[in-house]
Length: 264
Image 1 (cartoon, helix red, strand yellow):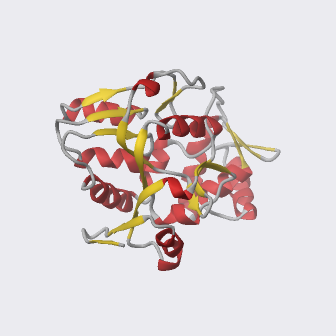
Image 2 (cartoon, rainbow, N blue to C red):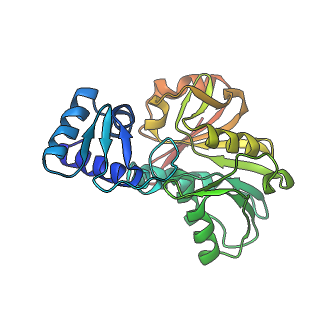
Image 3 (cartoon, rainbow, N blue to C red):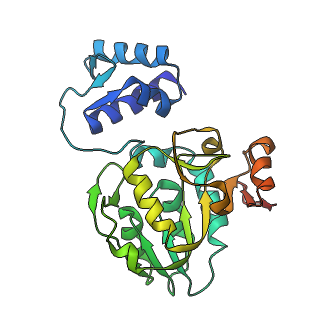
């Protein structure tokens, strides 16, 4: 990533979160700690942010609770063509009249473009997905209760008793922070709680993850690898990154950005 792009992302994150740690910035921009610290120093000299111990602070901080992970608008810009190709391939797995759960995220948001315009029952906790479905389709939409987190554009509840418990679906379409032999990983405990509730209400799990996600790691596992039915990824994913997934009996679909796809 070029320096100008790193600085743009750092400024955006700091303005949205008020305070961001060096470790979070290292994960998000994919640079070394030394590089991130130099970036913070240079931006602080220009007056764009304030350098603090262990991170950076906004010049005009706003104090609002946020989730661990990248904001929706920032994530949407990353691997956009791969996410669209993955979504197009994943949509082919949907049957007419099916009940679905679509969890919040930028990869799952791309799915909306390729959904049938009517006949589906959809539960989602994603505000952008809700908005898009209401404006472009006649599908039935159900929303679980909870608090709106503006950065991720998602509705989450710390309580077990919400609309999720009264909904059942054949398929859950979900993104993830990362994927390894232990299973599907996320970074924020509140997102993990939500995902676990959604998993209880579906028969099969389809993970939508671009090639970057198969190299990312977190300490929090949402679901074991045996819970995944299908992985839809892009054709930039190296064979060695998905060989163990195939070995676990998971169907793998590799969507080509040019429009081709392969299955195994």
